[in-house]
Amino acid sequence: MAEIRLKNVSKRWHNFVGVDNFNLTIHDREFLVLLGPSGCGKTTTMRMIAGLEDISDGEIWLGDRLVNKLEPKDRDISMVFQSYGLYPNMSVYENIRFPLRVRRVPKEQHHEKVMQAAKMVELLDFLDRRPAALSGGQRQRVALGRAIVRQPNVFLMDEPLSNLDAKLRVSTRAQIKHLQHTLQVTTIYVTHDQIEAMTLADRVVVMNKGIVQQVGTPTEIYDNPANTFVASFIGSPAMNLVPGELRDGTFLADGISIPSLPRDTSGPVTLGFRAEDASLVSEGGQFRADVYSMELLGEATMASFRIGEQLVSIKSDKSYRAEIGQRVHAVIPSSACHLFDARTGTRVS
Ligand code: ATP
Image (cartoon, rainbow, N blue to C red; front, top):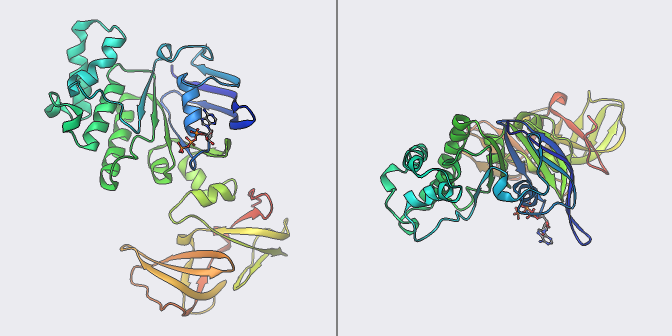
């Protein structure tokens, strides 16, 4: 049973709070992704779980063991880092075998376990090579092979794909997802890349400045962001956010008038809507503005507009064309609108 519980976990260095009162239960076999911008406390959270960083406050439980004071080696956790951490003088075979030696796994089991792990990460043809003679993707697979060889209870992965080029990142990402599904190991994965988070996670934890902003499935976080920070961090492009006024259920801003919104709030609000939820039309609609730029994405066309300080994007059919500066109209259905408190950024509807 590899459930992980964090209860009121904080990390402080003097006056600086790196992680503030983190509370979460990570379920057995769950793939949990910690997502947030640089410096938000993701790595620190993971290092505290691994035992590489003391915690200032709170409790960390692995199954029914309180592990606050337990050495990293006694936590039955495997880690994979961005910098693969391979031993340059050892072959791929010996690198993968290394954790078995350190943990004094009986020698007669080594060969079978190494071969099994190497097969899973598709390295059987490279076992005699040294890391220097491998590509970045192959090196990262050695690091993965080394993490899985001793079948730990928990995997911790800290930005394991960030040194790979875009294409390799996509294929290695799929491989990690497949491995985790096959091995059914509780996994915590740190990234600042929202696409990685959305594609890999059972649940995502969005963090900012040491504070958890939202915990939810990728769909929950995408469809119902808890605040403007989450809304602006998830999705490509991020959700459009436009400041304006809500009056009698109608949102008003420069060039925008959307009726049929909730009447229980009024005054300054931030309107959120996703580029793909609006559509460009020749006349009418709730939105009109001059085209600021047009981008051809292949499968779609993205038109953007300046509303005050904000850039607003609307996705359209791949054949859609408009000139820069041309006045266009758009339909923004009220059902696709999100409303956030103008001051705090918290969702109000
Ligand atoms: P990145 O994506 O850049 O790795 P992160 O979200 O993983 O960022 P952390 O490495 O967890 O962020 O750092 C969280 C905050 O704590 C940062 O502001 C960082 O500067 C600070 N921090 C980390 N380690 C220490 C330390 N030893 N002493 C003081 N502050 C630290």
